[in-house]
Image (cartoon, rainbow, N blue to C red; front, side):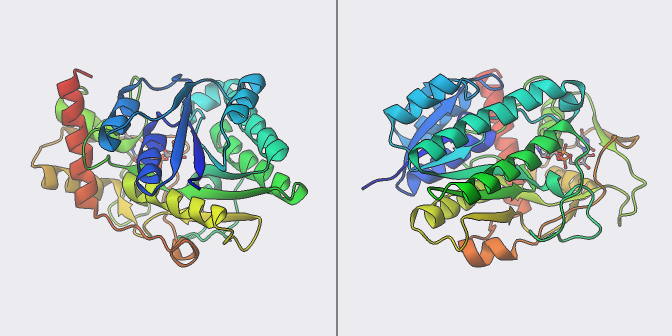
Length: 341
Ligand code: WQD
């Protein structure tokens, strides 16, 4: 029988790509989103790519009754939880907003998992490693005390899931720790659609290239790295989405070796901010207006993944090149222009 996966936050950047990959892998997907931080552009793109309408529930997972009703209506075999706020700076200014939303929504989902028996995949982040002593980081690399409420919520949600798995035998869980997801679907029908001024590098690059922003500011060129800019593990969004399919399969096929497992989702290749900018200009034949400015508070100097565990246990590997990813990011920005967005 076809298994059903609930994708909370399924209309967002990562959720929409995961929905496409899961559906193409043969799963039934139910999308639930409160549209607090996105519009329906990605949902419509998902339906266009798949050639069918997917069930879409407009709801907030902080609403315990609505969450219960959703799990009552659909038989959910696994839930992937993306519905959360994700702006690091905003979380420092408004910690309660982050704690109430990001923790409250996940607690309601865990309550349903406990009540009904369900597999839970949590979207965690490399932010839990803080500034690591060395890279690449493995899943055994100790977590560092978080520097933002956003990062705190990622650590706490990992711990909530670990503790629930330990206490409730009918709950299994996987946390995927994403490095820096970038790019867009090759169809250019779904992608990242930040509201207001983007915090993240690649949307800022594409918005500058298209003329929405006058200049891209590179935060710091005096870091102890080869070219003085920060090093990151930029992971293609479609590669990242596919990791979820492997993780869901591992849970639903009963292949987990422990009730709670953690996997890094990255390429294993560090790239500097400057290298990424240069690659973007080269592959897309566009000239970016950029300049150096002061370091951004709280930025990690260098971090990249050791993805060996995911490679081995999930059978997943990142395959797309930086060039393909940056072409897709640009095609998406051009598509948004066509849509007038
Ligand atoms: C990457 C690099 C910046 C913008 C954050 C969260 C993480 C995850 C992804 C998300 C840094 C530099 C950026 C700009 C720049 N969570 N930069 N000019 O900070 O690695 O990770 O987003 O939902 O948890 O912490 O990603 O894309 O913001 O920055 O120079 O305008 O690009 O300084 O070195 P980051 P990022």
